[in-house]
Length: 214
Ligand SMILES: N[C@@H](CCC(=O)N[C@@H](CS)C(=O)NCC(=O)O)C(=O)O
Image (tube, rainbow, N blue to C red; front, top):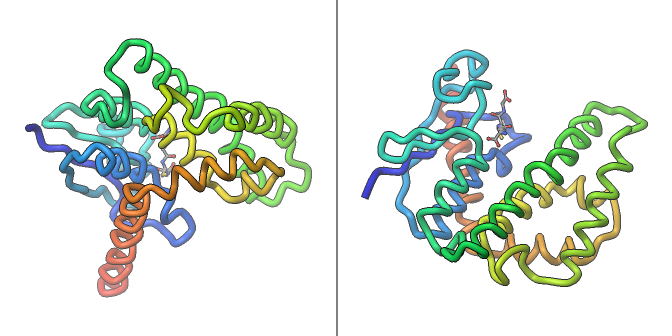
């Protein structure tokens, strides 16, 4: 079995902790029962210090026995192909899962992330609010009719969609009970809790090293 390595930053400020996207890959490995280790690149100098591994200087990226993959969605799909627990093996189940993975990235997160950046920048009139509301309302209808996005069971698509939707500002932008219940259901999974706790512990340990280094 090849060695799976999830790469993240050695440290990040408080704000993004618990949401840094290495969590998606940690969570997927936990769900799938895949052994992995975590390695780091320095947060300081991130704009240039690992461009050969991630052309935008971001994290995460994945190394699977020498096969190198950046983009959390690509890493997630790679892991999903390794385990039926994240994606069904039949063509229809696989297609449905991939479709919803892409929808999470390209139809939901594509608007929620820029909306959130505008919100925290203090923009009073967030020009993306209407667009985001209509996407979230459409998704609310879907989630009102089923527990899971694809294949009638938890898949990598739910992992990604719930990760995009668990941003509390995004959900408090409107009253969407089915979406709230969905996020609660998915994030109640032990694998999510472990991945999040491990990430928080990773960055907390880095605080100690950083303050010791002065
Ligand atoms: N589309 C990328 C986005 C990755 C991303 O935004 N990573 C954040 C951490 S969660 C990051 O590295 N931010 C630092 C930066 O953009 O300089 C993915 O999903 O992997």
